[in-house]
Length: 127
View (cartoon, rainbow, N blue to C red):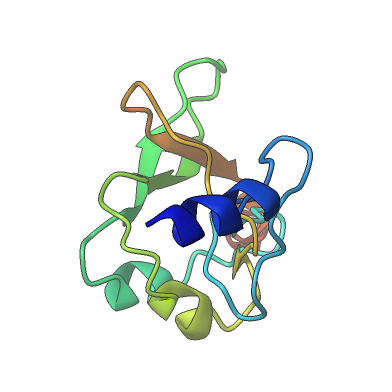
């Protein structure tokens, strides 16, 4: 036992000094989900591919404006997401990607809602 104590006394620590030495993430590691609404065509492939129902696409009336136009909404619940990457593979437009760095821990349940530009709808109504 004395040999183990002396050996451990003169060797460095096994762990990293966390705030000063950060671990590099492995290639292909699954991190937080990033959404780019400018690329989204509102096709619904990501919603169909999600096994837990963490992504939901919906339309709503925009009551903030006088014309009560339709708004395209994408809701993402990070507490339901299992970071499987099915939505990233299913999106044909590249609007969703998995970052390499993990998501920060959350203390409150917050569902992110993004408004998707509805240029298709306005072109369809105008024609």
